[in-house]
Image 1 (cartoon, helix red, strand yellow):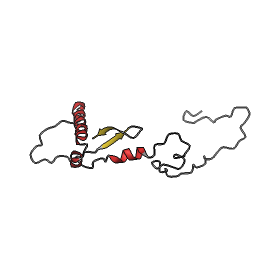
Image 2 (cartoon, one colour):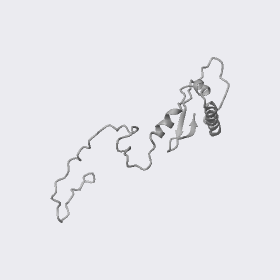
Image 3 (tube, rainbow, N blue to C red):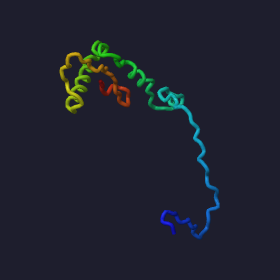
Image 4 (spheres, rainbow, N blue to C red):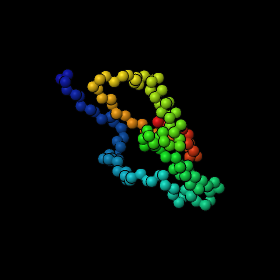
Length: 131
């Protein structure tokens, strides 16, 4: 018995499974995701007692998310966007993510950009402004 040699495997006595071994599972049909945001005919059946008549789409589309700092401050919701930016900066300072310092001479600051998002409730109304 060589210590580096693996002993042969001895099959146990008993009923052997006669079924063939599956070589591989059948491939699942791949398809791209559907357009979940569009209302299908089945969703708008006339049997429904409650109908939103597209209210959700209307509420979501009536407020635009600003694409820049200037747009945010010039929008009718400027106060809400300013509050959202203040909350975001305060959270970063509180968590110690970074600190505000004076830029040394000859150095260039890292460019950053505000991203603005509206968060909606299930009924489509605005839950909060995120910056």
